Length: 383
Image 1 (tube, rainbow, N blue to C red):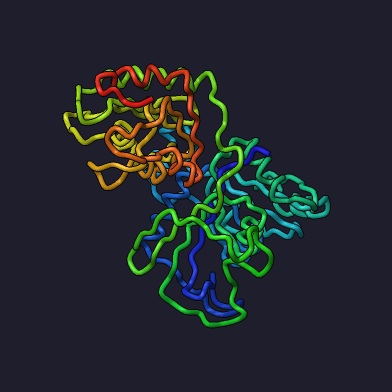
Image 2 (cartoon, rainbow, N blue to C red):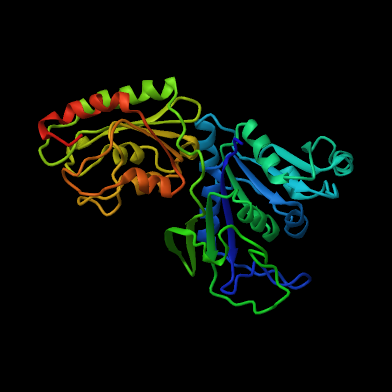
């Protein structure tokens, strides 16, 4: 089933609560700096999904608040705000909620005909309503969103949806903010509910990164390796990779580093940036690093592909952050390469494995391996 890359996002207390119990004053679990981070993540996505219960409880607008980020999306050929979606089993949706009057295109997935009819009657032209069957609701929703062009989906809640996505192995990444408070109430809503999860209690998510944001902490997890991520190369992939290999010839000669070319291409097929090793006379700069520096913060990176004449490094001696990490942090979900990095300079770099562990699809095109090696022939790198 084709589906978007799914990112679960939430903030919780130290004891795992999303909020105080119903009817009590709401609990603020984040801060202004983290709100800005969430705004940035929203801007990098094609769509945002919330449960109907969250809409009723929180009355959120769900939009990109930063004018600069909206302008960057428009400059990349995207609408200023991601699309928004919700799922309802009752069809009981209040047309006065801010969700319907702010942000991008709105979609409602109604479970069953009765819910669909009620949702249509309630919302009129405020949203596009689609009916889904009772069985396998979330796979239907994800497949339909993918058909609309959604390649990166942010799920903002609530707890029931997060639980179902994790149980059904439909999530690729979890971004969890931990606030330094304890709710201490057994009836408070929690991030994940009880039940059977794949792998049971022995299943461990892969920690992909941590970050302190004021008085809260962001934890990023890769939930699982997505089956079928290693897709086949297309004709467009071959053309761009050929250009990246040719770009490697522009690198200043070196006997202590590879010559590599890299090009970042948006989902619409347009080039976003390119770079090559040692660009600008800096002997430590890698090709992917040089290209990404030119488009830092561009929301189009979420749907972009990096074409590199050599596998992005998974370890490096000249910089604290290898290119595999830079690519993941930029939000890119797909990389196309010509050949694997040999152990000439940094043994066991394993960039491809590190990218795939972060849920990033890596496509290797061995037909271009010789073109990628050619600018490095003087190094006699291993094949």
